[in-house]
Length: 215
Image (cartoon, rainbow, N blue to C red; front, side, top):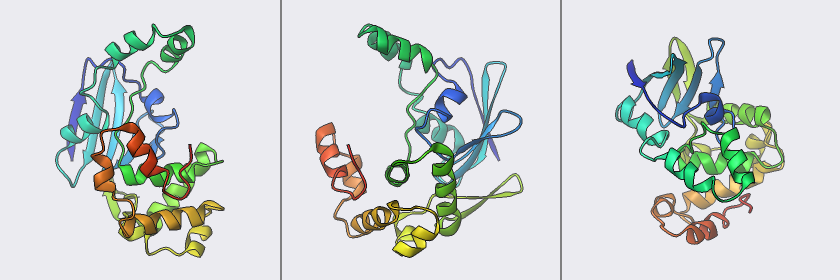
C-alpha cells in the first residue's frame, strides 16, 4: 500500500471533481473519503485539515506519479480561471460555482465508452452500468479486503455480444458499444494515434466516426 499527501493545492475540491459528471468510477464513502478505480489502481482519497491524503495499490508505476498525471497537477488552474473570468459574467459565475474542479486525465478508451453509455441517462444509472460492465469483463483487483474491477480493455469487451451488453442494462446503447469496440479492435480508429493528434478538429472528426459519439 502506498500513500501520497497533497498539500497547498489550489483549485482542488473532491466534491467538485468527482460529482460534476465528468467521471463515473469514484464513490463517496461514509467517512467522506472517495474510492476510485483508475488505470489499474484502486485509490482512496480523503481531505483532512486542508491536506489530501491518497492511499492505494497500483500495478503500473507509482502512486504519486499516477495522481499527478490523473489530476492534472502540472496545470495552473488559478491562472486560467483569472483569464476566463474576464470573458463575461456567466463564465465568471460558473468558475466560482465549480471553483475546485480539475479536468481529469481519464483513460481515452474508458472515457469513450462511458460517455456513449451516458447518452440520455442519469449519473446513478450510468455508474451502475459501468460497474456491471467492469465486474463482468474487467480484471479483478483487491483493496482493503474488498474486490474491485478495472474497466475492461477493448480486447476484454470484444468478448461481449449485443445480447450480452443488453443483459447488462445498456438499452439502445448496446449496439453502439458493440460497434465501437469492433472499430477499435479492427484499428478503423487507432486509439494510440488519436492520443497524439494535436489539432482539436482533427481529433473531433475521428471521434465522430465511432458509433454512439455525437456532438
